Image (cartoon, rainbow, N blue to C red; front, side, top):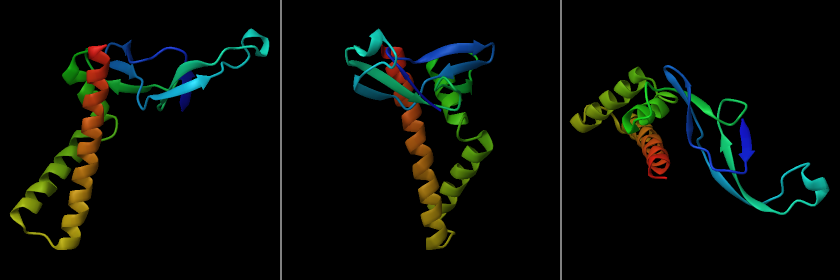
Length: 131
């Protein structure tokens, strides 16, 4: 679900083993808050987040707010440990050269998607911790 806020969001503790993280941030320029000021609202910069929860967040498993725990939680929200292990095993097969070209293309695509999401997770957490 997508939600717009007038302030930037990052993460909050959800319970003992989980955090709510605000991913997929988009800056919304000239946003006019709905229903405020009787239609005379001044446009502002707002922030949009899209996640699985109604508030735009995504709930992740994380024991604390450390960089590693948050990054791992974000990665696990899309790839289980078993899926990650399979992707890495596929790359070993690619490196050994014991698969055909069609399978190599498939495995390279899944490796690319995994690494793209991993970099997204790292960049998101680093931005939160640097602010």
